[in-house]
Each structure stands twice: as C-alpha cells, then as structure tokens.
Length: 323
Ligand code: XMP
Image 1 (cartoon, rainbow, N blue to C red):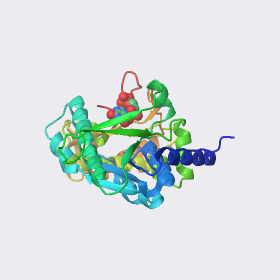
Image 2: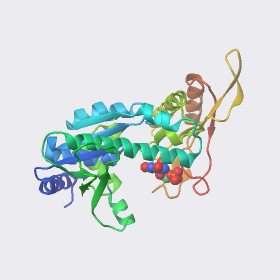
Image 3: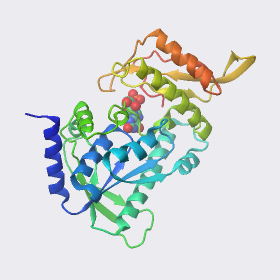
Image 4: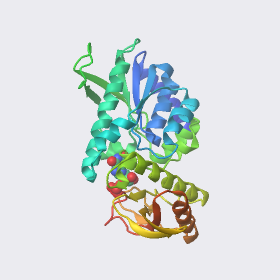
C-alpha cells in the first residue's frame, strides 16, 4: 500500500541512487513544493545538497525568516541566502506596468540565482551536476511528461567555468499531487507554516501593488496582508479559502476621516477566492464579522490606509491576482 512513509523511503533510495557521490543544488522559493523537494533530497544526501534562497524583498511578513530559520532548523540543510532586496527595488523603480514588472522580477531572479549557482560550482568538493526541482504530477502532465536536463548560461564572466553548464534534474515529487506533497512535508517534520502555505505568486507582493513598487509600499502591504492572514486563520477559514490576495491600490487615494481630521489615503482590496485549481475561481462568501474585523484592524493599524474594499468578482472575468 501507498503510505506517506513509503513514498519518503522510496524517494530517498532513488535520490541516493541517482546522485551518487556528486553534489546537488536546489532553489527555495518559500513555497511548499520546493521546500518538500529540498527536505527529501537533504534526507537522502545530506551535505551534498546546497539550497539557494533569493530574498527579493517581495515576500510576505515572516516568510523569509521561516525559510532562513525554521526550515533550516527542521532539516539541517545547507542554505545560501542572497540578499537582493536593493537590486530588485532599483530594477523596479519607476515601473507601474504589470507585465513589465513581471519581466523585471523574472529576469533579476534568474540573474541572482545563476550567480549564486556559479559561486557554489566554484566551491571545493565533488562536482555539482544535479538540480533539484519541486515538479508535481499535474505539472508533468501539463508539460507533456518528459524528464530532462537544464542549462545555465554564464552571463557573469566568472573565470574558469564553461560557458554553459548542464544539470541533470532531480524531481522527487513527480508522482505526487499537492495534498500528498503536504503530507510528505509533514512526515519530514517541516514547519506547519510552510507545509500549509497557500499559493503565492513568484513575483510576490510586487504584483499586489497597483502602481510603482517602493520599500514603503511593500512594508505597508506586508502589514495589511499579515493582519488579513492572521484573522482568516483565526476564523478557521484556511481550508475554505484557496487564497486571499491583499492588494494595495497605491495609485488611488480617497478621502477619509480618522481621529481628529480628514485623511487622504490608499485603499486595500481583499480578494478571497475559492477554487479547485486556480483556473477558475469564485469569490468566497466569507462571514461579515471576519471582514469587519480585518477592515477595522487594517484601517487602525496600517499607516496611510483609510479604506478596505472587497473584490466580489469571480474568475472569469477577473483573474485571481490584480496584475
Ligand atoms: P491568476 O491571477 O492568473 O492566478 O488567476 C492563478 C494562480 O496563479 C498564481 N500566480 C502565479 N504563480 N508565478 C507563480 O508562481 C506567477 O507569476 C503567478 N501569477 C499568478 C496566482 O497566485 C493564482 O494562484
């Protein structure tokens, strides 16, 4: 029979067999899939694995710390953290167009990640020839099923390395669905906050600020998002809600009245959706009391926010994210 324990043991044996005495690299995104894949490979080959985490400054409150501290404590993984916050902010300065933001974030991410890979390749030790990826079964089916190799190209003129390095892929989650991945993560003792994490887009909070991305706006949105997440969890809505983007309308202001006077602040949008696979979604009819609590807390506690609005649009016609 197929139990979570079996899956773990089988995969550990398969990974050992595949990697042998070579080394492997794994990029951690903060999401469930890469975390579970890395933990499995760590169990199999220990210090032959190095993980890379790019801190682009677009994560939600506490998420980077969960990777840097809790994930490392739970797994003992060797982790290289690259602090690239300034670099991303500089690259995003003055940009409001959603597609342009996505392209910039994707491009910078690859550059930073590949630079980190090259640094690891130059370290002493056995050859690095494996790249770990958290590919799930639905991803395999969607992309037609092949396994493969990945190339990294050296844009950085790091001396002594070939122009083009080829990695063989290690994909220990290829036979699993998301709920099974979460079970494997639990079995491996990963922090609950990571294993139960709801989907979060790669470009992070960068595409949840309508307007230019700045440090101040990111900090403000992080606070509002943390309040919403806290209250949704406290109300026991994490299973009913697929995800709840919290969006800052940075280019919009409205008049309010707070304390002794008039304010001219930004709205925050709550976008709770129910979905099976994110291809379609319905807005979640969540309890008014919970909405009221989130709204009160955000307008009281987050500077420059004087209004909270609910997005009651299904997908289609609206996408889940605003950008
Ligand atoms: P949309 O907004 O297209 O989102 O309805 C569907 C799902 O995909 C997530 N999403 C992303 N995930 N990189 C990701 O890894 C991305 O660039 C990205 N854009 C959207 C979104 O959060 C939702 O779950």
